[in-house]
Image (cartoon, rainbow, N blue to C red; front, side, top):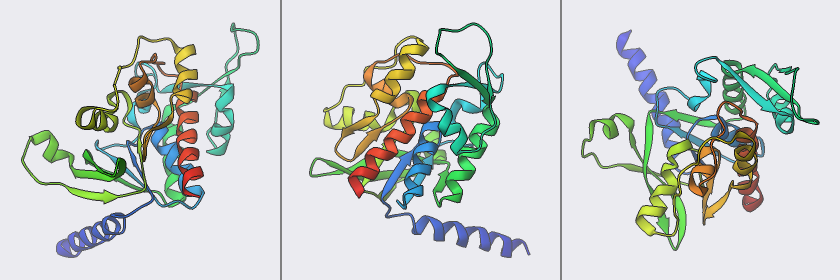
Length: 255
């Protein structure tokens, strides 16, 4: 029985990995922006693979604010909460005129976003790191991957690749995919995120979401980190909207 279980796991995993070596879009990072982007891509029939270097998906959203597992979402992103059937309640109390905020469970939010993405056919691989990019003729053509354990152990093990038409950097504060272009090609400057200013940061994270290099789209906190914009803390409407915008950029190009 033990060998049968091992054989099933290995064969099933390898089949899915082999089928993912060529795809339309690779999303690097399975935080809120990356998962939202992958959902909308797959919903439009675009083959999408998500790579997460950590054991768990969801980025920093699990912990809410200072380990209180609640997050806040503003009115502009309410349709996304509804899209994913996430329960929420309106925040009552003092705020600027015309502003509306909602609270929800960070655990429910990330669980439902991930589940909906998987239901749409997104392929998610955890414990895989992107250590480099495939760049040919001044365009990103895919990612260079290795096991996260290899990265953490600092072993010299040659990587493998996944070919794609677009790569989305959803790696958060590190903006690690964009750093490959900045450090190896020199056509980007990573300014680093600024101090917290939630109101401004929430707007700019959507504005900063763009195709930053041919074939490479940046989303979420990676977009703000590249542009030097403020961090926002545990308000996530901008992150959701940024992920949706990243998907729309790829969708419009791939049609």
